Length: 168
Image 1 (cartoon, rainbow, N blue to C red):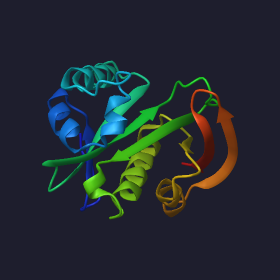
Image 2 (cartoon, helix red, strand yellow):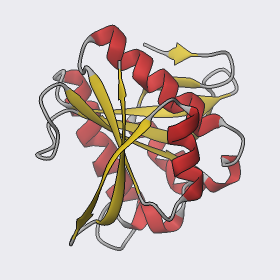
Image 3 (cartoon, rainbow, N blue to C red):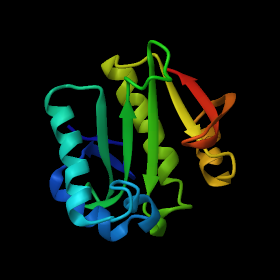
Image 4 (cartoon, rainbow, N blue to C red):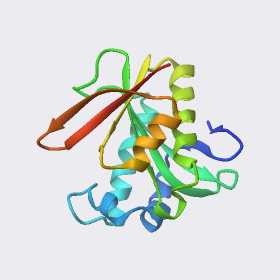
């Protein structure tokens, strides 16, 4: 399964994507996967969990965000439908583009394609983006993708977050 808008494509993440993701991703973000190491083993293990969830039709889905007809990995898009902070019918969406590909509108395209996937599959009725309010670029993605500010939260573990929502 692959979704495309002619510029980018989303496809289920594969374990084989771990090396490309590690090479292109923001080192701070990758290190967060295993509490500080950011190793190929930790990224592989993280991707294996998503591959298993896809296979089981579970509540966690990760897409590879690609360009060049699906050949080049430029980021990831995660969808979670079972987070404790979500209301019934909501899905949490987390997008991350490799630094070299930021500022080109690709994140907005990925979020829109992710929303289309959720609408088509019926996995959610509303999508939530929880964004660090200091990240002007991420707030811009939410606004360009048609999301609306809902509320702010300040969790001791995650810090301040602005919640943006969009009905599907």
